[in-house]
Image 1 (spheres, rainbow, N blue to C red):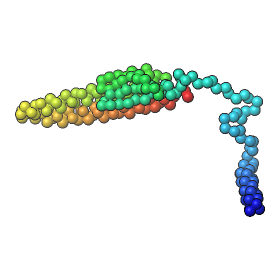
Image 2 (image 1 turned 90 degrees about the vertical axis):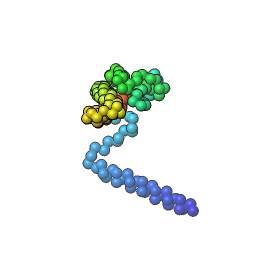
Image 3 (image 1 turned 180 degrees about the vertical axis):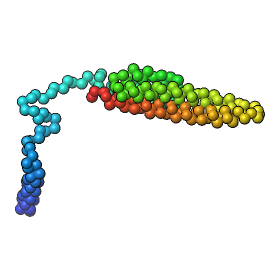
Image 4 (image 1 turned 45 degrees about the vertical axis):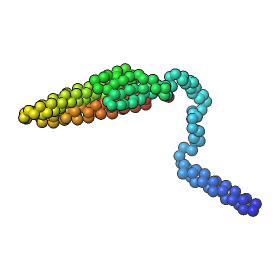
Length: 185
């Protein structure tokens, strides 16, 4: 039994030495300097960079932003604690540009959010009012050709408005992603 263990160790050692020999053969003719271990500097006689301890109040977890939405309302939340820093929705501005001003990409997406949110809110509301007016005219038994046109036009405007509000939420998501990406860790 002992001889089998000894033979297994010898076989394993020979396989490992053969693997390192073939790896050395692959780098023959190239610069065969030793590669420094991960996290170490490859420049000789240079001290390792000193990293400052992270301030827990300024850490990524405390500064990252996210949003939650419910029935067209948006709540922007900072950090793991869940501090509410802004609300938005139909005709409400979250002042997102101020929140993400440190990141140029996030700022561009924030502007896109505000533009699409306002347009979608405005056109969606006008479309809803137009549809209601068309329904009221239809229920009053008026044989006006304008009734179906108002209903169809209003529904189309509502669909367009909802689409733009949805596009604004996508821009909001991208703005927060870019802001979080650019935060120091």
